[in-house]
Length: 95
Image: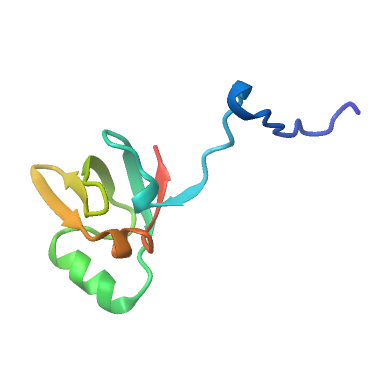
């Protein structure tokens, strides 16, 4: 089996391997984590986000995740609360 990529085989709580970082949603980002916005779904949402200075390609930091509430993100000196339903639609990539 030489030359084949190693598969991720999780054995429950003993698993020490981490899956490769890939696209995830803003709702999945952990507090304090930096990420790059890679996709904002609709034109209407994209226009609203652009008013706050948030666009595809921007690097943001998750400041707070309120349980069953919004995700607070920060860019430069500005903090914005994004509703959880909208955060599930915005794709990000961990940095």
